[in-house]
Image (cartoon, rainbow, N blue to C red; front, side, top):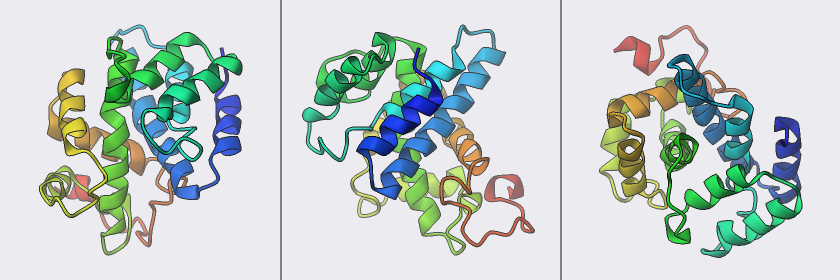
Length: 204
């Protein structure tokens, strides 16, 4: 099994762009939060395996920016590095064009969190304080209808991801917001929010 520290070393080896690194951390925050939730509900979950998978899911994006090179060629690199098959398969399955069906809870969770984490980051950046603490599910749903906003984010993947995971979309969005709020500083999403004003979710 590869450790979280080793996974982060691989991310930093292949990704130089800070925004891409923070995206890996944002997806990790969401996936790890779900790992804790599912474990508490009695599901058989390996939290570190989920963390490592989330961190590595886009590790090759800078060297393989085009589909299907990402993540297919990246999977070969991970295989050479000794990354377990369960992680590599989950990473392959998060791209709809690889032909790898999402079957496990980990695979479905990674897919559900990937595009959403990127979209939540984009929404946070247009808030007055540029903070994830100002983001709520209602504003996210509104922005999803604006095709000109964060147009690179696939809205269908967000909707389908929640459906595949078997969770309500609004609840899924709110859950991932909370997960990212807990690591706002690390994700570069604290902004100028000083904590004196209730976050968007708690204020509702």
